[in-house]
Image (tube, rainbow, N blue to C red; front, side):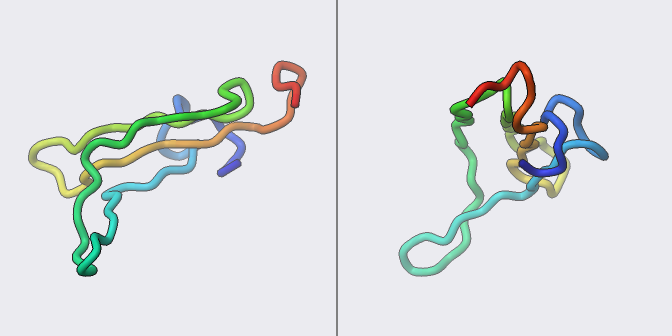
Length: 75
């Protein structure tokens, strides 16, 4: 999933999304401010969510991914 690296490996290794937004019913874009991370197999892949930081334009962002199948990740 992603680039094959766990999210804790960070920028340059793990895949990420920044300034996460959603479209509300009228079609206006809103910042996603309360994402709840959930991974069904964290030994295979995971997600780390970072809330917006003041003074930046990144908004809510998250790193995600993992190597997928391995000896520690049994499906």
